Length: 124
Image (cartoon, rainbow, N blue to C red; front, side, top):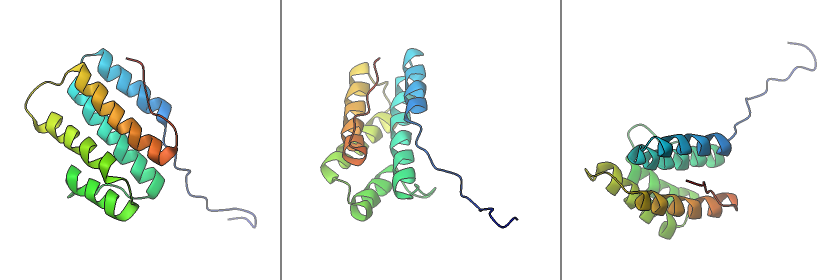
């Protein structure tokens, strides 16, 4: 290692554009349930990158949400309905509608706006 060399950590980056592209692919192929699950993964990635607080393998979706509210001071009135919607759709045993996807995306967009101070939306 030279005199002016630095051991630099790789820069973390939340790739919003790529995540939106992936969502559009899921939607265009008619995979609504996977698109809704992916919205949750986007949420988890955002929290991991913004707060360095990844979801642990043993944590349920709800446990992670509780941690985010309690430790990261996220608004429970935004996080809990979003997580309930995700759980209902993923574990509900029925195929979601485009309307349910829109509702889920809107809920996430409110959380995203609260964290990043900008909207998260796609045209579909």
